[in-house]
Image (cartoon, rainbow, N blue to C red):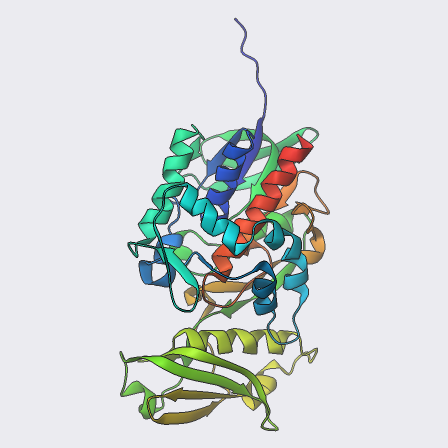
Amino acid sequence: MALKHSPVKLAIVGGGAAGMFAAAIAAERKVPAVLIERKARLGSKVLMTANGRCNFTKDISADQFLSDLVSARDTKARDFVAQAIRECSPRKIIQGFKSLNVPLRRMADARMFPADGKATTIVHAFGDLLRDSETPVLTNCAVTGIQPQKNGFIVATKNFTLWAENVLLATGGVSYPKLGSVGDGQNFARELGHELVPYRPGLIGMETSDPRITRLAGRRFEEGRAKVISADGATLFDYRGEVDCESFGLSGAAVYNCQRFIEHYIRTSGIRGQEDRLRASLTLEVWFEHERLQFKGLPPRPVKEAIVTIGGVSLDDVDPRTMESRKVPHLYFAGEVLDIDGPTGGYNLTLAFATARKAVTSIAAAL
Protein backbone atom coordinates (compact mmCIF):
# COMPACT_ATOMS: atom_id res chain seq x y z
CA MET A 1 0.00 0.00 0.00
CA ALA A 2 1.40 3.39 -0.98
CA LEU A 3 2.04 5.79 1.84
CA LYS A 4 0.13 9.05 1.74
CA HIS A 5 2.20 12.08 2.65
CA SER A 6 0.37 15.01 4.23
CA PRO A 7 1.43 17.94 6.38
CA VAL A 8 0.85 18.18 10.09
CA LYS A 9 -1.79 20.81 10.74
CA LEU A 10 0.33 22.74 13.27
CA ALA A 11 4.00 22.81 14.21
CA ILE A 12 4.61 24.58 17.53
CA VAL A 13 8.21 25.74 17.82
CA GLY A 14 9.23 26.21 21.44
CA GLY A 15 8.27 24.13 24.47
CA GLY A 16 8.10 26.81 27.13
CA ALA A 17 5.00 28.34 28.72
CA ALA A 18 3.43 29.51 25.44
CA GLY A 19 4.33 26.35 23.52
CA MET A 20 3.06 23.93 26.17
CA PHE A 21 -0.19 25.86 26.54
CA ALA A 22 -0.60 26.01 22.75
CA ALA A 23 -0.15 22.25 22.49
CA ALA A 24 -2.70 21.73 25.28
CA ILE A 25 -5.25 23.94 23.49
CA ALA A 26 -4.53 22.16 20.20
CA ALA A 27 -5.29 18.84 21.88
CA GLU A 28 -8.51 20.27 23.32
CA ARG A 29 -9.61 21.65 19.94
CA LYS A 30 -8.61 18.48 18.06
CA VAL A 31 -5.98 20.27 15.98
CA PRO A 32 -3.26 17.74 15.03
CA ALA A 33 -0.04 19.32 16.26
CA VAL A 34 3.59 18.56 17.02
CA LEU A 35 5.56 20.40 19.72
CA ILE A 36 9.27 20.99 19.02
CA GLU A 37 11.68 22.06 21.79
CA ARG A 38 15.41 22.69 21.42
CA LYS A 39 16.27 21.65 25.00
CA ALA A 40 16.11 18.15 26.45
CA ARG A 41 12.93 18.84 28.43
CA LEU A 42 9.89 21.06 28.27
CA GLY A 43 9.42 24.17 30.39
CA SER A 44 13.04 24.79 31.40
CA LYS A 45 12.44 28.48 32.09
CA VAL A 46 9.04 27.85 33.69
CA LEU A 47 10.84 25.69 36.23
CA MET A 48 12.83 28.76 37.31
CA THR A 49 9.93 31.18 37.73
CA ALA A 50 9.44 32.65 41.21
CA ASN A 51 12.55 30.85 42.43
CA GLY A 52 11.17 27.51 41.31
CA ARG A 53 7.69 28.03 42.79
CA CYS A 54 5.93 29.15 39.55
CA ASN A 55 3.73 32.18 40.11
CA PHE A 56 1.65 31.35 37.02
CA THR A 57 -0.97 34.14 37.21
CA LYS A 58 -2.74 36.56 39.53
CA ASP A 59 -6.31 36.25 40.78
CA ILE A 60 -7.57 39.54 39.33
CA SER A 61 -10.02 40.58 36.63
CA ALA A 62 -9.05 40.89 32.99
CA ASP A 63 -9.55 44.66 33.17
CA GLN A 64 -7.26 44.98 36.18
CA PHE A 65 -4.65 42.80 34.47
CA LEU A 66 -4.70 44.99 31.36
CA SER A 67 -4.45 48.16 33.45
CA ASP A 68 -1.42 46.77 35.27
CA LEU A 69 0.38 46.08 31.97
CA VAL A 70 0.77 49.76 31.18
CA SER A 71 4.24 51.03 31.98
CA ALA A 72 5.13 54.71 31.49
CA ARG A 73 3.31 55.91 28.36
CA ASP A 74 3.48 52.53 26.65
CA THR A 75 -0.08 51.27 26.04
CA LYS A 76 0.62 49.38 22.82
CA ALA A 77 1.05 45.94 24.39
CA ARG A 78 -2.07 46.39 26.51
CA ASP A 79 -4.17 47.23 23.49
CA PHE A 80 -2.65 44.38 21.47
CA VAL A 81 -3.40 41.65 24.01
CA ALA A 82 -6.74 42.99 25.28
CA GLN A 83 -8.92 40.55 23.32
CA ALA A 84 -6.66 37.58 24.11
CA ILE A 85 -6.68 38.38 27.85
CA ARG A 86 -10.44 38.83 27.97
CA GLU A 87 -10.89 35.43 26.30
CA CYS A 88 -8.25 33.77 28.49
CA SER A 89 -8.41 35.79 31.68
CA PRO A 90 -6.35 35.09 34.79
CA ARG A 91 -9.36 33.54 36.48
CA LYS A 92 -10.03 31.26 33.50
CA ILE A 93 -6.41 30.12 33.71
CA ILE A 94 -6.89 29.36 37.41
CA GLN A 95 -9.98 27.30 36.61
CA GLY A 96 -8.06 25.51 33.88
CA PHE A 97 -5.40 24.30 36.29
CA LYS A 98 -8.06 23.28 38.77
CA SER A 99 -9.68 21.20 36.04
CA LEU A 100 -6.34 19.40 35.68
CA ASN A 101 -6.52 18.58 39.41
CA VAL A 102 -3.59 20.85 40.27
CA PRO A 103 -3.96 22.03 43.90
CA LEU A 104 -3.43 25.79 44.03
CA ARG A 105 -2.51 28.40 46.61
CA ARG A 106 -3.59 32.05 46.54
CA MET A 107 -1.32 34.55 48.27
CA ALA A 108 -2.58 37.62 50.12
CA ASP A 109 -1.60 39.82 47.16
CA ALA A 110 -3.59 37.54 44.77
CA ARG A 111 -0.57 35.81 43.22
CA MET A 112 -1.29 32.19 42.35
CA PHE A 113 1.06 29.22 42.86
CA PRO A 114 0.79 25.46 42.86
CA ALA A 115 -0.06 24.49 46.45
CA ASP A 116 3.16 22.53 46.89
CA GLY A 117 5.26 25.51 45.79
CA LYS A 118 6.93 23.52 43.02
CA ALA A 119 7.09 24.65 39.40
CA THR A 120 7.53 21.00 38.40
CA THR A 121 3.87 20.49 39.31
CA ILE A 122 2.79 22.90 36.56
CA VAL A 123 5.17 21.47 33.97
CA HIS A 124 4.15 17.91 34.84
CA ALA A 125 0.48 18.85 34.44
CA PHE A 126 1.20 19.90 30.87
CA GLY A 127 3.29 16.80 30.28
CA ASP A 128 0.52 14.52 31.52
CA LEU A 129 -2.06 16.26 29.33
CA LEU A 130 0.11 15.98 26.23
CA ARG A 131 0.87 12.34 26.98
CA ASP A 132 -2.80 11.49 27.46
CA SER A 133 -3.77 13.31 24.25
CA GLU A 134 -0.95 11.54 22.37
CA THR A 135 0.48 14.85 21.18
CA PRO A 136 3.90 14.27 19.58
CA VAL A 137 6.63 16.07 21.53
CA LEU A 138 10.11 16.40 20.04
CA THR A 139 12.73 17.48 22.58
CA ASN A 140 16.46 18.03 22.14
CA CYS A 141 15.48 19.19 18.67
CA ALA A 142 16.46 22.70 17.60
CA VAL A 143 14.68 24.15 14.60
CA THR A 144 17.23 25.57 12.15
CA GLY A 145 14.96 27.17 9.57
CA ILE A 146 11.38 27.83 8.46
CA GLN A 147 10.66 28.07 4.76
CA PRO A 148 7.22 29.07 3.45
CA GLN A 149 5.87 26.86 0.66
CA LYS A 150 2.79 27.09 -1.56
CA ASN A 151 0.87 24.82 0.82
CA GLY A 152 2.50 25.36 4.20
CA PHE A 153 6.02 25.45 5.58
CA ILE A 154 9.10 23.31 5.62
CA VAL A 155 10.38 23.29 9.20
CA ALA A 156 14.01 22.23 9.19
CA THR A 157 16.03 20.67 12.02
CA LYS A 158 19.55 19.29 12.02
CA ASN A 159 18.39 15.76 11.28
CA PHE A 160 15.07 16.01 9.43
CA THR A 161 12.47 18.34 7.91
CA LEU A 162 8.79 18.60 8.73
CA TRP A 163 5.93 19.74 6.53
CA ALA A 164 3.36 21.84 8.40
CA GLU A 165 0.29 23.75 7.25
CA ASN A 166 0.64 26.26 10.10
CA VAL A 167 3.57 27.27 12.30
CA LEU A 168 3.38 28.88 15.73
CA LEU A 169 6.56 30.52 16.98
CA ALA A 170 6.62 30.33 20.78
CA THR A 171 10.36 30.44 21.38
CA GLY A 172 10.49 33.04 24.16
CA GLY A 173 12.80 36.02 24.50
CA VAL A 174 16.58 36.19 24.77
CA SER A 175 17.09 36.01 28.53
CA TYR A 176 18.62 32.91 30.13
CA PRO A 177 19.93 31.49 26.83
CA LYS A 178 21.19 28.36 28.61
CA LEU A 179 17.52 27.45 29.11
CA GLY A 180 16.79 27.68 25.38
CA SER A 181 15.72 31.31 24.89
CA VAL A 182 18.30 32.23 22.28
CA GLY A 183 16.24 34.47 19.98
CA ASP A 184 15.83 31.92 17.19
CA GLY A 185 12.12 32.67 16.78
CA GLN A 186 12.86 36.35 16.37
CA ASN A 187 15.58 35.52 13.84
CA PHE A 188 13.18 33.35 11.84
CA ALA A 189 10.66 36.21 11.90
CA ARG A 190 13.25 38.71 10.69
CA GLU A 191 14.31 36.40 7.86
CA LEU A 192 10.66 36.23 6.83
CA GLY A 193 10.37 40.02 6.63
CA HIS A 194 9.20 41.02 10.11
CA GLU A 195 10.54 43.99 12.06
CA LEU A 196 12.22 43.37 15.41
CA VAL A 197 11.99 45.90 18.22
CA PRO A 198 15.45 46.14 19.90
CA TYR A 199 15.87 44.08 23.03
CA ARG A 200 16.02 45.54 26.52
CA PRO A 201 16.21 43.74 29.87
CA GLY A 202 12.96 43.59 31.82
CA LEU A 203 12.46 42.76 35.50
CA ILE A 204 16.14 42.65 36.38
CA GLY A 205 18.32 43.96 39.18
CA MET A 206 20.09 47.31 39.06
CA GLU A 207 23.79 47.82 39.69
CA THR A 208 25.41 49.90 42.41
CA SER A 209 28.62 49.49 44.40
CA ASP A 210 27.31 51.70 47.22
CA PRO A 211 28.49 50.06 50.47
CA ARG A 212 25.13 50.85 52.12
CA ILE A 213 23.74 48.16 49.80
CA THR A 214 26.62 45.77 49.21
CA ARG A 215 27.35 45.31 52.92
CA LEU A 216 23.81 43.91 53.19
CA ALA A 217 24.26 41.44 50.30
CA GLY A 218 21.99 38.46 50.80
CA ARG A 219 19.41 40.35 52.89
CA ARG A 220 15.79 40.33 51.76
CA PHE A 221 13.29 42.94 52.93
CA GLU A 222 9.73 41.79 52.31
CA GLU A 223 8.10 45.10 53.30
CA GLY A 224 10.10 47.29 50.95
CA ARG A 225 9.25 50.04 48.52
CA ALA A 226 10.83 51.59 45.44
CA LYS A 227 10.10 54.73 43.44
CA VAL A 228 11.24 56.26 40.15
CA ILE A 229 11.68 60.02 40.46
CA SER A 230 12.15 62.46 37.59
CA ALA A 231 14.75 65.19 37.33
CA ASP A 232 12.22 67.76 38.60
CA GLY A 233 11.37 65.65 41.66
CA ALA A 234 8.06 64.18 40.47
CA THR A 235 7.27 60.58 41.38
CA LEU A 236 6.81 58.70 38.11
CA PHE A 237 6.31 55.20 39.52
CA ASP A 238 5.84 53.80 43.03
CA TYR A 239 5.72 50.13 44.02
CA ARG A 240 5.52 48.41 47.40
CA GLY A 241 7.15 45.00 47.54
CA GLU A 242 10.29 43.07 48.19
CA VAL A 243 13.69 44.81 48.08
CA ASP A 244 16.77 42.59 48.04
CA CYS A 245 20.37 43.66 48.56
CA GLU A 246 22.89 41.89 46.34
CA SER A 247 26.64 41.93 45.81
CA PHE A 248 25.98 43.73 42.52
CA GLY A 249 23.33 46.12 43.86
CA LEU A 250 19.54 45.86 44.18
CA SER A 251 16.86 43.37 43.18
CA GLY A 252 13.45 42.15 44.36
CA ALA A 253 9.95 42.76 43.02
CA ALA A 254 9.84 46.48 43.87
CA VAL A 255 13.16 47.11 42.11
CA TYR A 256 12.27 44.87 39.17
CA ASN A 257 9.06 46.75 38.45
CA CYS A 258 10.82 50.10 38.73
CA GLN A 259 13.49 48.90 36.32
CA ARG A 260 10.82 47.80 33.84
CA PHE A 261 9.13 51.20 34.16
CA ILE A 262 12.44 52.96 33.43
CA GLU A 263 13.04 50.92 30.26
CA HIS A 264 9.57 51.69 28.93
CA TYR A 265 9.89 55.34 29.94
CA ILE A 266 13.14 55.66 28.01
CA ARG A 267 11.98 53.84 24.90
CA THR A 268 8.75 55.85 24.65
CA SER A 269 10.44 59.19 25.30
CA GLY A 270 11.02 59.86 21.62
CA ILE A 271 14.49 61.21 22.45
CA ARG A 272 16.88 59.40 20.15
CA GLY A 273 20.55 59.32 20.94
CA GLN A 274 19.94 60.69 24.44
CA GLU A 275 18.98 57.51 26.26
CA ASP A 276 22.01 57.50 28.57
CA ARG A 277 21.34 61.10 29.53
CA LEU A 278 17.68 60.37 30.22
CA ARG A 279 18.55 57.33 32.34
CA ALA A 280 21.07 59.41 34.28
CA SER A 281 18.37 61.97 35.10
CA LEU A 282 16.15 59.39 36.80
CA THR A 283 16.44 58.58 40.50
CA LEU A 284 15.64 55.24 42.08
CA GLU A 285 14.52 55.63 45.68
CA VAL A 286 14.38 52.51 47.82
CA TRP A 287 12.89 52.04 51.28
CA PHE A 288 13.56 49.07 53.57
CA GLU A 289 13.55 48.78 57.34
CA HIS A 290 14.50 52.32 58.45
CA GLU A 291 16.53 53.12 55.32
CA ARG A 292 15.48 55.55 52.60
CA LEU A 293 18.18 55.72 49.93
CA GLN A 294 18.39 57.43 46.57
CA PHE A 295 20.47 56.45 43.55
CA LYS A 296 20.67 58.28 40.25
CA GLY A 297 21.07 56.64 36.86
CA LEU A 298 21.56 53.03 37.99
CA PRO A 299 22.22 50.67 35.05
CA PRO A 300 20.34 47.37 34.78
CA ARG A 301 21.98 43.97 34.77
CA PRO A 302 22.44 42.33 31.32
CA VAL A 303 19.44 41.17 29.31
CA LYS A 304 20.66 37.56 29.48
CA GLU A 305 19.87 37.62 33.22
CA ALA A 306 16.47 39.30 32.90
CA ILE A 307 13.22 37.64 33.92
CA VAL A 308 11.63 38.91 30.72
CA THR A 309 12.77 40.40 27.43
CA ILE A 310 11.41 43.80 26.41
CA GLY A 311 11.35 43.94 22.61
CA GLY A 312 10.93 41.25 19.97
CA VAL A 313 8.65 40.82 16.96
CA SER A 314 6.91 44.11 16.25
CA LEU A 315 3.22 44.12 17.13
CA ASP A 316 2.57 46.09 13.94
CA ASP A 317 3.36 42.90 11.99
CA VAL A 318 0.87 40.68 13.87
CA ASP A 319 -2.94 40.63 13.87
CA PRO A 320 -4.11 40.75 17.52
CA ARG A 321 -7.42 39.10 16.58
CA THR A 322 -5.61 35.91 15.54
CA MET A 323 -1.88 36.25 16.43
CA GLU A 324 -1.22 35.57 12.74
CA SER A 325 1.52 37.37 10.86
CA ARG A 326 0.35 40.19 8.64
CA LYS A 327 3.23 39.35 6.28
CA VAL A 328 3.32 35.54 6.09
CA PRO A 329 -0.03 33.71 6.03
CA HIS A 330 -0.38 30.76 8.45
CA LEU A 331 2.57 31.92 10.58
CA TYR A 332 1.58 32.71 14.17
CA PHE A 333 3.27 34.08 17.29
CA ALA A 334 2.71 33.68 21.03
CA GLY A 335 4.40 34.79 24.21
CA GLU A 336 7.70 36.51 24.75
CA VAL A 337 8.84 36.20 21.14
CA LEU A 338 6.52 39.19 20.66
CA ASP A 339 7.19 42.71 21.91
CA ILE A 340 4.97 42.23 24.95
CA ASP A 341 5.91 42.13 28.62
CA GLY A 342 4.34 42.68 32.01
CA PRO A 343 5.32 43.38 35.62
CA THR A 344 6.43 40.69 37.99
CA GLY A 345 3.71 38.66 39.69
CA GLY A 346 2.46 36.11 37.14
CA TYR A 347 1.74 38.57 34.35
CA ASN A 348 4.23 37.23 31.83
CA LEU A 349 3.12 33.61 32.07
CA THR A 350 -0.47 34.80 31.70
CA LEU A 351 0.51 36.71 28.55
CA ALA A 352 2.15 33.57 27.18
CA PHE A 353 -0.92 31.44 27.91
CA ALA A 354 -3.44 33.94 26.54
CA THR A 355 -1.64 34.69 23.28
CA ALA A 356 -1.03 30.95 22.73
CA ARG A 357 -4.71 30.23 23.19
CA LYS A 358 -5.67 33.03 20.83
CA ALA A 359 -3.33 31.69 18.14
CA VAL A 360 -4.48 28.07 18.37
CA THR A 361 -8.19 28.87 18.55
CA SER A 362 -7.72 31.02 15.46
CA ILE A 363 -6.03 28.12 13.66
CA ALA A 364 -8.78 25.73 14.79
CA ALA A 365 -11.46 28.09 13.47
CA ALA A 366 -9.70 28.35 10.11
CA LEU A 367 -9.42 24.57 9.83
